[in-house]
Length: 405
Image (cartoon, rainbow, N blue to C red; front, side, top):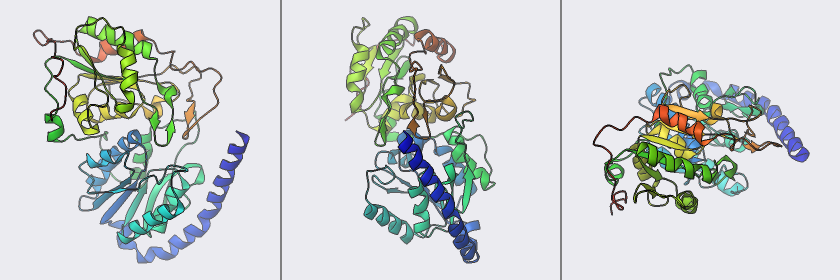
């Protein structure tokens, strides 16, 4: 830990020293790029990973689209996350950056190749939605005149517009608001921002209409190309008890969602359930991401861990119950945080997240996930799940929710 702390201090010191030459270069170049700085015709956003993080940039996308209606917007992200940009109407073009931005997963040659690709496109403005010094440097290498981004630990050295961001665990800020602060720094108007994911007609038509109230439940999460943080998962035994209660007491159909890697976990949740056939379905791995969004959109409620499906549920506009542990809902909760249709449950013993600034902090009392009980979740269910009206509770056939070929 001491070695890592020393390494971080060295990186921060170097980045702060680099501010001066970069600021001088920017000052000398400013008279030659006045039009590009003040009236951008082409804007690029850089956020390589991961899906949930990219969803949290969508409020900024809406602000940029409204503020620069004639500008072309390009999104640079990885193959893992580009589906989010593909489903947002503000994005005109997408550049797949591969594994660039994921520490230790890319070469300098690949990095420089991406810089050259961006340089050929002659962007006027860049929004760096990442705190990595390497990602911060990328738009400078691409000769983009105006470069806006968060200045975390002094690492926004090559940005023309460095926006302060807190690095104090006692003063947390939602990630979506950190990105919106970039727009605020440019004095762009912001009006009721929200996360957004727009499903296609084909994706919606691939899902059979609901014939009874549905609840999407996601027991997984915590795994992405950058890290593996399964400590964010609420115990499967509690999901088991919750699912049973949802079916018996509220008469809903429960859809256990997820990707191919969640099939086994969802099956564990289903083991031993004595419920009517078809009342609980394991949908993991059966739908594309867009189809999962359409499936979630058809539900009356989403319940799950801090994860990309949780953010997706908020982005398609359904009520969300999110269960938190090592991460804080103040940073990663369903957005916007003041939306009464969402509930974030967090009972951390210290009131400060174990996961902060992209890393797990030492924890001697790992009880944050188990502190949230089934009854806690059920209270939120009672508040957010609308009562079923007469004549709408009908059992679905076993193949109702299979996507159409």
